[in-house]
Length: 275
DNA sequence: TGTCAGGTTTCGG
DNA sequence: CCGAAACCTGAC
Image (cartoon, rainbow, N blue to C red; front, side):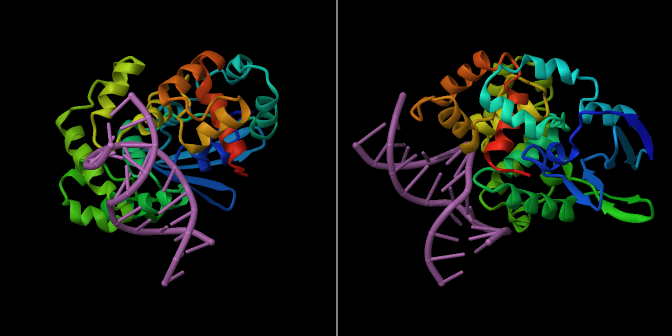
């Protein structure tokens, strides 16, 4: 495996927390699947050991996915100083944000609405089983995450067999639109323009759009406001439960210094008792 | 078996 | 604009 010096990287909370549904822990090795790569990753002290498949030694892919070019200390230094953040940081220092492949993130979060992380992971694996490309990894056959183009060529009824329920229509329609290029330039748009475009997709509302914008497109100031995100704001920071989504998000943008996504991820895992 | 999970859409007011 | 109901299914 390849080796990189990388302290301050908590693989467990980063890969198995709430931001990706595509990683498993086997022994001391994390194994992840995207729509184009299978990745093996583990920690050896302050080093990261890694390999990519079917294209091996693909450092550029890993670097983008894990956001290896961010200055982690700088980000932590921008966190506001308060007791909740201090506690969350104690437990989750090393938790980082990923930049997952855009279509993969759209798929995962379209499948996520009104479902627990565990149930989402299960659906994602069923879709992977049905649609994922087979590749060979160290002599073993494994499947990748499906490409949206492949899903768009199947039927909604078949898609339903993967446990996505009423979300099948959302995934199917979004796959077709993606294939037509509807989302081609979202990564170049401002936060609000990109968000408007995403919300035009059926099945994407404020929260799912914010997840895609944060976990794939690196809009780091956003804290996705699901029930846990809202609990952070109401229970820890005294915001009223009556506040509207966009009002809360505006507060996040101001209070968290532009790194609400990073701080929020730690608070999110902290408040939901992960790990 | 019954309830819960918990985002978006849809519908009634 | 707002609140409430409906949506599928897996987990427990």
